View (cartoon, rainbow, N blue to C red):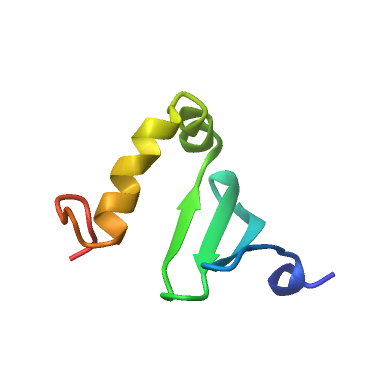
Length: 76
């Protein structure tokens, strides 16, 4: 299977993202791509593990940034 075709799509009525495992010279990573806004991020195992330490309240801050209530962490 072609690596470009090897992705998992996760969607709901608000958005759609593609997730896939990629192989780099630094090891395996997860790539998450938003089709809605052309955003893309690559995370290694340690970064993914750190997400498991967050509470649902932590993600509320991300929503504030995404919807323009706070731009302190947004890409510039």
